[in-house]
Image (cartoon, rainbow, N blue to C red; front, top):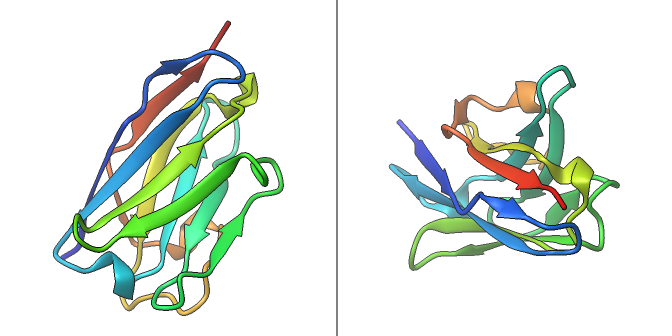
Amino acid sequence: QPRLVESGGGLAQPGGSLRLSCTASGFGVEWYSIGWFRQVPGMDQEGVSCLRRNTGGTNYADSVKGRFTISRDSASNTVYLQMNSLKLEDTGVYYCATSTPPLVRCPLSGRQYDFWGQGTPVTVSS
């Protein structure tokens, strides 16, 4: 019965920064791999990043490597996505997701995830 709630989206200029939050309930983020995905109308969903259960290992899409950082905070049971050097193509609705049983690997394929948040929109515009 996992629940995920995203927040932190908004409007940013190219080159700017945003930090997205994914707050979980019903499970501890340390014990479940959690992924970030984004969706733009008319385009395929893109896996952005994933934080691996237990080990804390990370995975990033090539399009965001060096610009985005995924992390977690056990005290607040929250996974963050720090987005720096934003580009116009980063625009989209961002979702966090997890799965039960917990994924051992950390895939960037959305079809492997069972539980999703409601999404938070991000707009990058000059």
